[in-house]
Length: 276
Ligand code: AMP
Ligand code: MG
Image (tube, rainbow, N blue to C red; front, side, top):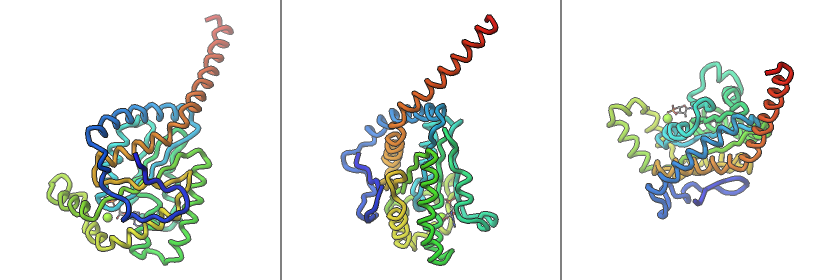
């Protein structure tokens, strides 16, 4: 699978990245692969939960109807709910606005052993805040450095950090928004702002490109996910996540074994002392 992974300096041109799945991918093959990946993710999460040396943060960003909720639904289903926390970031409350922009975000950073999924994130503060001019330019421009430092703090504490941009075309978005409007079970998800934001499509493209360029590193990469097809989107996200967790499997298992040895030693000592 060819990943559009950004993990260092370099230009990002979203229009040059296909939003459709590659011709070689098929839904049937993706389904099989996803089933295997879900089992693997469950196992990796279990090891990470016990080892408590790392945590995972997945940031999901994308335009309206890009599939952030669908990705959360799909991905969180692969995990044991005990160790997953999903946080959606909407328009900041009055209290949140009275703090620095990272205040509300840092509180939801995953603790050791946990998987956190952010549906929107601190990136809104360099996306919507920029496009809708919610803050002056010098303020959002300074935030790239602040975001890099924040993310580095998480990574230094053992966070496996992945940021996903769910990439859909303007046509696909239109179809999805219109389909939602027709569906009695889905229409509630809509907002006039979804259509207003479409008028700023190119401004958002630029804002995303700048954010990805400014805040990509080996430890905190961005992945641009072709998201016009939901099955391919889910596959790319699951594949990326498993690839990021897999290198830790051995160390997590060793940590569990070491913990198990200590417990066995204690039990043995207790039995000997108490003749059980
Ligand atoms: P939804 O994802 O449909 O629930 O909508 C959440 C809305 O909150 C979106 O329109 C976002 O642009 C907006 N939002 C999220 N974070 C911020 C932020 N930091 N500043 C302003 N608006 C935000
Ligand atoms: Mg919106």
